[in-house]
Length: 265
Ligand code: SF4
Ligand code: SF4
Ligand code: F3S
Image (cartoon, rainbow, N blue to C red; front, side, top):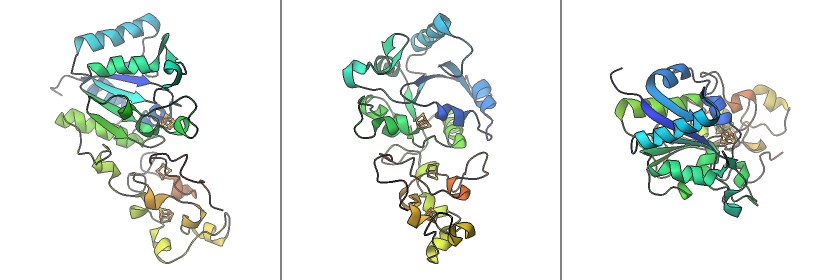
């Protein structure tokens, strides 16, 4: 309550905006408490009252007045081919915006698989040269928060940690917060007992599917995917993809669009 709110600039590159869609559904903490009490969201193309020149002014003022103090959150990534012409914001390539805003930032948060790994727009043959943030910005601390999208409470949990302790949470070798990315989906999956017992769904809609058996043989990538879905779950802790009968497609792993077929049956 006594701390000044941290200024945050949230940029959007090549992306689908579902990372923001996830973020606004955070229940613990409520996203309204994050935005109104914990951070000062000075610029965000999707979550700001200002528009047009007023918005651009706010962006400029935050960069000038809070040099070295603001957090740069990035959703999406820059296309790098043809001088970044595949993503133009406010008349300039996003690549330019990103480099300019990162220069005086205290640290960078790469939201989602687009910013962290490249995601679908970087899938082969990656026609626009879409490139994850850490390959463009190399002189700032970067926290990567992969997932397509990341879980809402993972996003707000990271912000809460940073506001509370004034530092990044502990990161792994890929700069992901260990508190959310140190376990595989498989480690805590409620279907794990069926995996261990050799009870598998062999075909979609077979008896095993109806009984909730393990989805490994129909393509589940839970054993190789690091994320918090089977512990934190989604929609306020209600469920996650496997609970809805669909295997994990590894959406938080590098190159998940190119890592073989999503379905093996
Ligand atoms: Fe959308 Fe996924 Fe990219 Fe987030 S990571 S902006 S959900 S495509
Ligand atoms: Fe592991 Fe997937 Fe089977 Fe769950 S459904 S136990 S994550 S292989
Ligand atoms: Fe993504 Fe797998 Fe979780 S597909 S949402 S990491 S269960």
